[in-house]
Length: 116
Length: 104
Image (cartoon, rainbow over all chains, first blue to last red; front, side, top):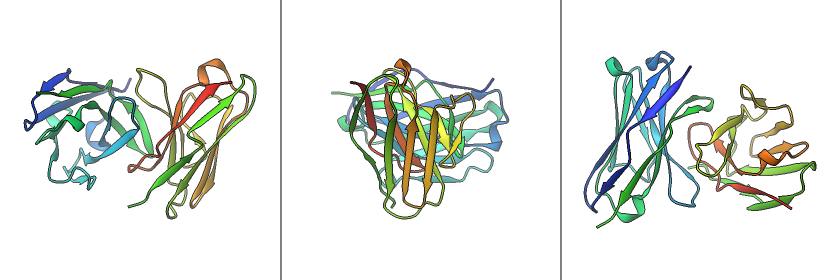
């Protein structure tokens, strides 16, 4: 069965960077884009962008452009999201999700807390 | 950038009744719309894609309609497990702000 397993919770100081991983299994990794979505506590879902796991092409939300980088390691069937220059407003649950027409499988989420 | 707007923010409905949630796009997105259900402490679950196609395993009481800029999600007879937050999304892009469906 399809599974997306994300790395564990992180606590970072303002100005630091964080990398979240998302390991895929149960399907051919390169045939789907991997999307990233975040959700601040009590807030709406926020689309961050996606990476084409097959060719590495990326699309970033303008809101995060310049601060976020998506990469993928096809040999490990793993996608990565790195967010830099962290601020307190980046405290959120970060999800990876597989999808073409909507996101049919989601990771469990990774809590990133930004606090001095 | 296309803005997705959902209404109402909160909908109070009794179990067994019908609920209709709305989603509007700021410009036409054809049928490139998905609906999700999210319960507290859980990742969202895909309900509908292509504006009207139920995802795998989704009960028939969930139905979606619309195209262009106006969309709706209808739950025909609410069950206790349906009370949650619902989001619409233009495919692979922005989400609406969500509608909380609560028990009346």
